[in-house]
Length: 429
Ligand SMILES: *Cc1c(COP(=O)(O)O)cnc(C)c1O
Image 1 (tube, protein in one colour):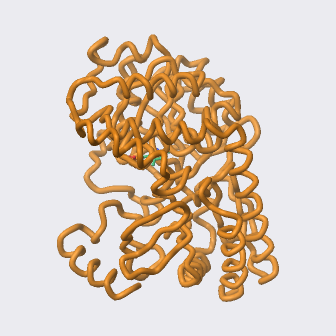
Image 2 (cartoon, protein in one colour; image 1 turned 135 degrees about the horizontal axis):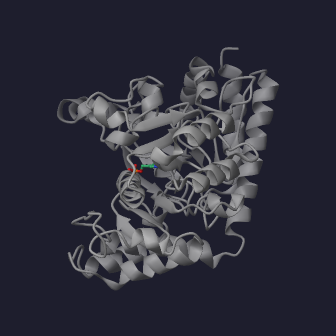
């Protein structure tokens, strides 16, 4: 948008595919050039042209205590001064593992990796080893990273670019993955009753965040747990986005679901590259070197990343009302947005889960990926750019979640509501 940003993008496109290191950043589904960021602090991001934005992307989830939080930055600085990587165990790894095991009741043991992609990929391998089965089931619109067997009917990036999800995934790999409509208990029960004994794992986002926000209907997660248990199929709950976001112990503590394995990422890295998978001790004990399921990483458990994650969880835990306050702030914002849309006569559907929400331009309820895809993308595009002009930075795709952080102030919320009211008036009805 700014001159400096556009110039950097022009050069970046020659050197980096699409000028970006992750597809959705490229503004492809909203049009226009991406904005290059110089720095961020609290709820704000500042681009290279000096324009300020109230940020609702939050690095796609990790920045729940805001950008460059003092406590987190201090912990990172202290850690890096002691050396940025050892390739040998450090006490910080055990400290973060302990925090995770205490926070998430279903996790008895946990292995740190470098991304959510790695976490999901490794959990699948482990589930296949444990059950001695090859097939997996996922749900349309759920994203579990970009490993081959999981790039089937993914949301966000995939939704934006359209199906098929990716070239380069051998049919022989994809054939082991079955994707079912989210919230469809019958579809899942039917296949599990018939073919469950060949299914290693069912992997699911307990609240979908990667097709916009889609909440599980009453009884859905319970049904998923029940049919998997009956068939000896492992349940992998992917809480890379929802873990420490919708509640300290993740969505599984809200819905009271006990998965066999859980994937984490985003918040537990405090803005540094981290993922983790964990769960039942008898399953996790199969991971090398304790067991024969190989999985490794040069930078896994990196001390600087562990310090950032630990410090973030400390900031959250310091405040007994951290989640209620965050939720109340989000509710105020979403109520204001709904009101603005209604006043402008623009129908929207705005699902929320704690400090996560999204906006679909539609007059219908969105219960699955097909519903999400049927919403008005042209209106979203207009809304996105009008909000950007007002200095509000939203996810540049209709199929992504918005995130509120503890650093967002009352003034930020008020300003955002005002901007939203104005923007909705500019959206073509
Ligand atoms: C972000 C995300 C991933 C992938 O994590 P990366 O760190 O981007 O590899 C996997 N699953 C879910 C639910 C996510 O939100």
